Length: 120
Image (cartoon, rainbow, N blue to C red):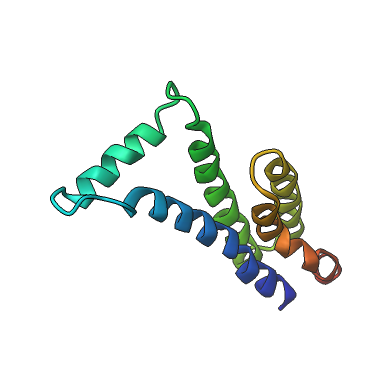
């Protein structure tokens, strides 16, 4: 049961990062323009590695993927300790990439690490 709670809490980080993407793609658009087309253009610009400052967006997509995968491992797999170690490594990497508040959200499932370890 504790692993399912950790998995549910682990979904907060991908949700937060998806929220950042939604704000980036769909905020402050002129009324006369098609918002979907502008969002696609913004995504293309954000994911072009040759542009300056776009690596943060690529890192956020990686963090979303890691957060979803570890949450699903905590929900459905028998390798729950592996998911917690991946979450710990992800949190350490996030220390160098994001602000402290986002690192805290990414590291929240680690509060259940000891309980998950004992139950596996």
